[in-house]
Length: 349
Image (tube, rainbow, N blue to C red; front, side, top):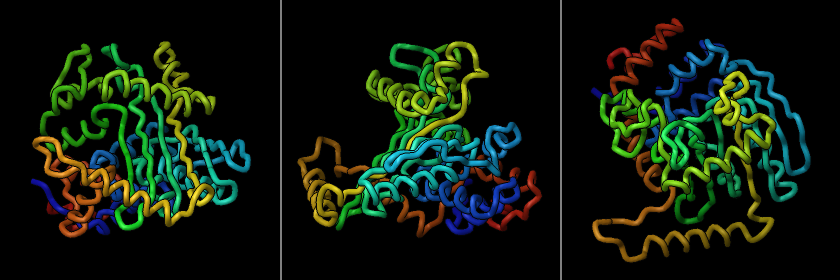
């Protein structure tokens, strides 16, 4: 049975979990906000179902609740941050704020992050830039979890990529996608719901196609070589450029040298190039033009990046965020594990 939870109640509970796990209250609030932001938009693969895996990562030393985040190198437009295995949203929100400040001064800010951990939905960070009247970009690369085109085993990370631009009359355009057919978190959602996954999403340990989420060993790239090649270039622009490669050492059989997640965020000040309000109006016109095109057979409406998520958000603000049985059970277990009070909505789930 699925329960529906008010976003504020869920966010407060997630914050309490993270405080009990050792995060400072301000960092716990950021982490909770980013997870519930994803749930609100229907991206449950990057929402609160991640909490048990984060708690496990703390135990294993893969996520640091009290990191010593350092700016290693910096110029007027660029920065390199070592996250000390920080919770991803904690360091990435800091990095985007720095990128935006640089963009205000010199037109662009590009911040490379090394040694971080799972960053949640990358669209959250590009949305922050968009709210400041900027173009936002964000991507990440991690240990291999996706088969390169032509392979039957893991060799690349399904690097998520987000680009956001502001509009005026319409909602902003927010692209947020993995380079795999489906993000790995969608496998977790299927497990929590007790359902199969579609053919074409993943392979098992033997390199065979599987529809069982519990048998998944390797994700498959979208668009064949296109998703595969894009993922490879994201590793080149993140881990390799940060001097912290994650993929090649692992594939060479030396997992001790395969280090943690890396990524970058960037902000571009639109006003450096053109009038901001005029740009937004032109994005509106672009959206109208695309949505006004003749529709293909069987298509009721042409959608633009971020539009499905915006509609889900409106529904979930009214009716609450749905949590399947598996997620509810895992959150109950987390509350018990950390000896924090179980909210009434969770106890009854």
